[in-house]
Image 1: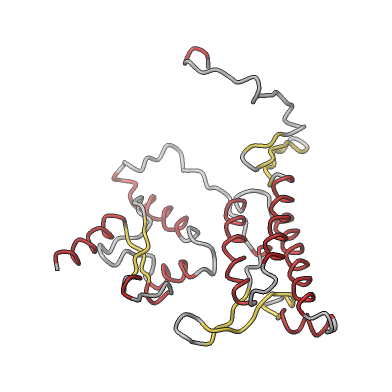
Image 2 (image 1 turned 30 degrees about the vertical axis):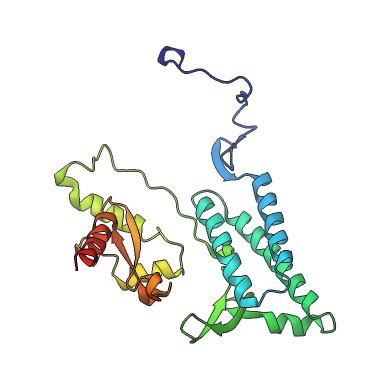
Length: 257
């Protein structure tokens, strides 16, 4: 490394045996009986749980619908970051902690009500989970809608798939291989069950401007059909995913018109 002009900082570097493990960017890497396992770092998980508890306690007067909207992106962000490693037990633990936090939040709102009444009021059965924090509310268009909190324990663990051999994305003969690979990985780009995933499904995962698949290597941006400045809403019906250049083309055409 010194031959290439690189130096190791003694303050930030330590040498450990792989069986003892080490933490890096929120992950713990450690060898168990000869097998390397990568897990969420314990300290980061506990810190995340405490922050969730703090956030929920600060929202004591919020409506259930608003609290769900607040917590959903936080849980999805954590799950998306760790879903590529050994995280199933961690996700189950966090889901349990969140449920306990929310039950206490609900109980404090109704100190004179029994535990069963509170549970039936704020938690509903969704699939096989009868402790789903959920409620009925109205969306931005005034329509009735069922809102439920993301069950982080249901997040699928997605392993990285290595590229076959020395296949290059620049090889024209391998175009079909890379299209299939990008489409498969692209369908996991947005959080499962999110409105952005639904928008992509509505488009059949294709860019409506160029007709190409969204995940062809180009960057993707989300476009408001009716601009927010003109009263456009941030819901599924008013959103489409476009390639960056196609997005610029749409705006340039509107400016010329």
